[in-house]
Length: 537
Image (cartoon, rainbow, N blue to C red):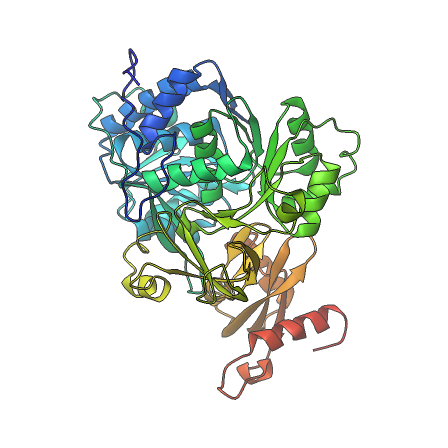
């Protein structure tokens, strides 16, 4: 591809050379090339429809270039982590792409976090510059800034989109800056640091490269059946890797339009899918169930051809039949693998796709309980290949616990193999909870609860929820009123982390200890269910 007049990058040979070698793809392996390629091939095609407007691929390239120059004028350099905290929007995407042009690393911040949780991410990632929206839905980040700044002394520059408090740079003042752009990033440069919750008390940083995310985006959406001119509806938050890789970069690689919203609401989503004539839908089982059960579905004229789902076979079958997404596929992945590891394909038998049987992505290896997929079995899913992270950032001990010397990643998830080269996701082996698409580590919630002066001890477990999958509940050693603690928890931590129910006991012994002197979380979860069913404490 020749350099375009006024452009900023020249597309390169797209063969991939990492070890182990991923498949040869027709897309780009660094983000600036992907942007230039899309603008050159389809400059007038809509790239994104979001709450703040519409933008074509040609406009996206120009805006990205302008923002990259503004960041360069601010002093942002190659390899620097820059935090980004705002809702799904064109602005989020152009900031992400502009930082990628400089070789800087985006640190997405979950907009549902509270000030202490945000401060942890910024401090842990070594962030000196950040871009925040003043407010996202009910989260008032402008009011959180004094606490965040006090907890993150290295945070030197904060750009505020919206009402800019004193000490921040207003967006309109920031974008007028211009400085020459440096050389392009390399395929193996970090593109993103994704914070993911695990079984440890606080989230772990997962660095992912340009090549990993772009290749993952290409092969995943190839199996989804995404083609140039298609329109993908995805309300998955951009601060998750499913939003960056499987929404933004997938559409960029395949020259498709991404249609998004700042908050998933089923009636609005159905209306938007119909109005925008979306050909594909992407989401988790909770989102799909809310769409299927909504009274507006029957009267809504959808134009779906396919869907990417992380859902049960029952939900997938209903999406195929009731939403006419006949090419619907299922996928499995995790942040540590960029994220997609395995997936079914749009051209495969519908029953196979609905049953959740997936093949590893090209160049990826998957084992179940240490065995190849040509053996029938059930056990932990382990994966190896080009999509897997090189390790948690500055976490050698946790990396060693997750990645072995041969590069096999322990997922902590349960799977089964069919003996014919395919596998299905069964459930989560770790204590991790999945709350409406969000990962929640009980240990993290426990640590947050213990910040309350009247809580001496806390145990958090998950209980099933028909709509959200799991919800956290807590048992606390405290004399305080449970309702008061519950309100404090909702005010202190992200809503999906806050326990739905809190019960107070007199001492740790009242929680029930096993032979090892530890609290049995399984027994505690059963006790919580009994309490909710009125069986007493």
